[in-house]
Length: 215
Image (cartoon, rainbow, N blue to C red; front, side, top):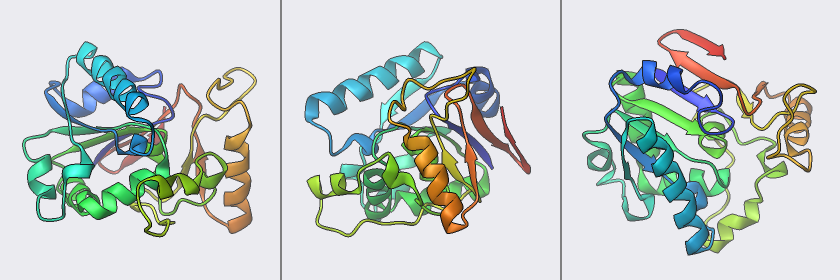
């Protein structure tokens, strides 16, 4: 299994993603975490990530989960050696992964190790066992912009810890967390007895086979 889970984009370790993937090729870009945003904001976010990946040597193509169903989920990811799941609202992303059936396909392909999963912020948080504390940063009510379905509190359970992105330290402050949401997330995890790992915006959680480490 190969995972590249960052606080923000590549962090300081874009080279490590290239090592996990090998020769960069076609990569599926999932912008579902931005699906409740205004159209212009979602489009700008997607365009920015496509440009980032293109500059790194990838051939990015959007996988729009709004158009994917459980019967088409496997085909939607066919031919991809990697997926890139951008940030936004984790609750919206979790909903889209569930209703599209892509959550099941991702778990299976990761188990077979024929796909690299790269995600940042919400795209990293959703891989944990639960979404404990994430409401400190992402409003669950944003889900109501796209559905009346209840808010899911489970993550994909691919990793054992909740990831807390945008963590600030005296030497690595995060401009993406002006309100201290990351510390509120960590406090909520501690109060619930849930294991967590913090990530500064330079750091990345990497799984390569049986090896887990934060770079």
